[in-house]
Image (tube, rainbow over all chains, first blue to last red; front, side, top):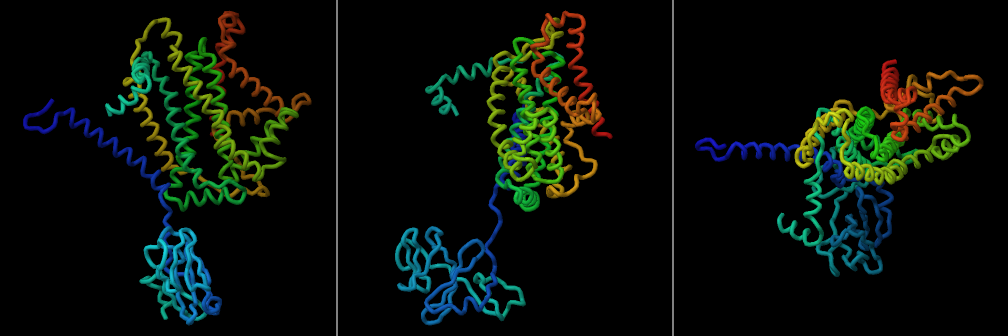
Length: 157
Length: 355
């Protein structure tokens, strides 16, 4: 039945109402399942604290690894004593890289990717340089933080 | 849609299969609401399978990890507490509707020939469902679960050496330890389902093959008509499922299933503990018997009687035959048995719940 000037018949109206209610119900039931299986929210840390003497004391042209959340972090002392901190994850496909002191390069074994000692991608498939992390030393703590992260006031230099 | 249908029809007899679905009918009479109980069970089973699979994602069996993983599940994982609550309440509703299903089949004598095997299969499915409940109850590894499992796995010992063997096999040793938890976990998620689903398939196949049973009086009075299953009865099923879903979600949210304290084998058993309500009638029966009757342990006698009645129930369709029904005493007892069983189970359960 359709009223004069009406765009839909009563049957159409009721079916659409029912379909809408049904999809609402389906969404309500599906939401908890999706949330339950959804990714656990574990973002990368804003900063990590490391014992500074252990890291600052490494030999030139060598690296020391630390946990950056669930990823690998690399603290590096270059041959000219410069300190750099990288996220040790290849920008190609997320493999962990290693430092090859004899070549002064980082190597990714997965697809033979190469970075120079400043983390710049120089050979193989990596599309971008290694990601850099910032650091500062405060007392006996080495604070490694993501660039642009705001640190708690007591950690400011 | 049409192209998919054509593609499938080219490969097998799609029309024939749809014809079977369309030609399926259900007798319609004033008691036909009892036909809904089986569908409710299927629906609840589906919910148990889905929620159980999801819980499995975060559950870690083991003495040192089980309780901790359930704590993490309920406190950290999004919607974890809700899904666990639904799984526990769903199990309870399933047992409740199973008993309704069983007694409606008993009262309307739907087990009569040619449906004896449907009854036997269904009764075994009930036993397996209770085994699901019993094994799942231990998995959170809390104090109540430990105590309940102790009592439950101790009971068979009263039946002599074979019972002792069963008890040791279930526990995986003298005591309930991580070893017990390991086998209960394996049973709950794989062992019991492995038996349950083929048996269920057989049960459903027989129901489809033989159609719905008619209550004897309706059959005598010829007071029924056949309605198509699709869509008439399917819609009724769906409406009832929706109501059951509403009850389940409300219970799950308004009465979250508790977790309690971590199991400690050295801690004293908490005061006034009781098994889950569906084991209460057995529990109360055991309490009725004194410790010693004429030099035999009361527990042994009680369990032998329980075991005897389980066998009577399992083979009831073969006892309820016309030759037996026509005998004055045996026939009378036989007719009375389902009602006595119902009264006994409900009063014992209520007694256990209220006192």
